[in-house]
Amino acid sequence: MSTLPTEFERTDIGEIQIAPEVIEVIAGLATVEVKGVAGMSGGFAGGIAELLGRKNLSKGVKVEVGQREAAVDVSVIIEYGFRLPEVATEIQHNVKRSIEQMTGLSVVEVNVHIHDVIFKNADKHDDSESNNRVK
View 1 (tube, one colour):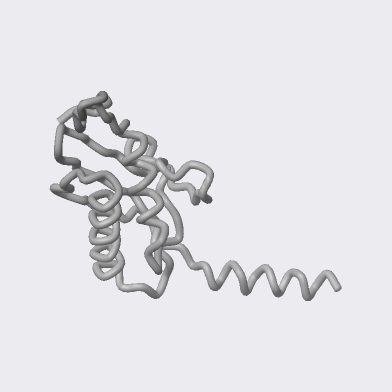
View 2 (cartoon, one colour; view 1 turned 60 degrees about the vertical axis):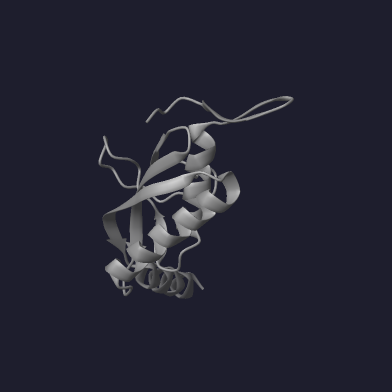
């Protein structure tokens, strides 16, 4: 498999190529749509987890794209209170479904790497307490 744009489909008026970055964005969007996902992890090499908004949806996503197949790795941060295996399974299904529907590629694997758990409700509670103290 290659990480370079490959000839995906040839028509009578030209060829269609899908860049790996496009697959990464699709996978990132599909991942953050899943309930329980707090954000994407900063990456494999650095090991520093950072929460990301929708600005860089390919962050924490690695893809390998062939002529007709794709393999995806996603690194995520999960909200506390959710069952990790259930969230990971839902990520796998959502990423596979999204990529296959949008590109026609066959997704052969979706590997989910859970790098952290975050306490979102505790952060909101702390913020509201600090706001109450300021008044």
